Image (cartoon, rainbow, N blue to C red; front, side, top):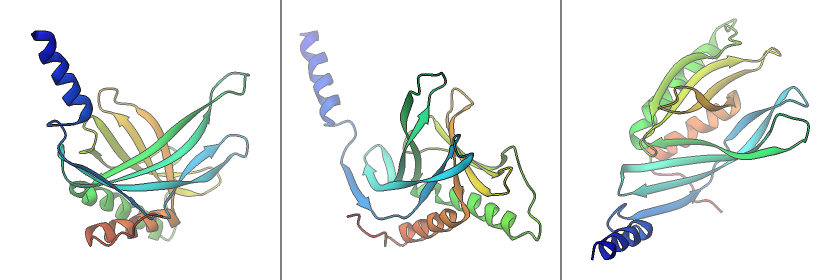
Amino acid sequence: MNSNIMLTIAILSLSGCGTIGAYTETDRNTQVNFSQYNVDTDSYVNKQTNLKEVQTGLVSGNTLLYAAQVTLPLSGTDKSSLNITYPLWINESEIDDVEFAIDRYRQWQSQSIPNKYLLTQAVNEYVSEWMNGVTFKFGLYSTKQGQDFLSVCYEFSASKTCTFTYMIDAQNVEILADDLQKFKQESLELGS
């Protein structure tokens, strides 16, 4: 009898019945790119993001899920690489946190001579509502070549270190800000 109960719980968990409630996912249009450092060219390369707007019974409100597929070279001489996803999850309750980071980036850029930060200058962070246990940390970062970025650190809260960091350049910061305004007004366009 215990095995039947356990089997029923397992099936319900896998099927989602009674555990996560309703789940909806809608593709949305975005032009946001995340930037990845390329060792071979000593520069940053833009990676197009995909955007989904999701809602589930586990998280209050809608959440934007940005994802850019990137390839990271593995150390060693075998030229192997690892395919990963750079995520940015923004729940309705977290928009102010992201907008605060964007405003700090804009203030930094509006200085007549912006400070240069070769080490990331932290500006804001939040623990993701979508995936509790993941923290997104935002910062200001300048390359040696003088290019300025809003950095995004993806961190598992338990580790207290960045799993990986990616960058968002000035143009894409503004596109992200525009997406957030449309999200608040419920006017993000459907994806194709």
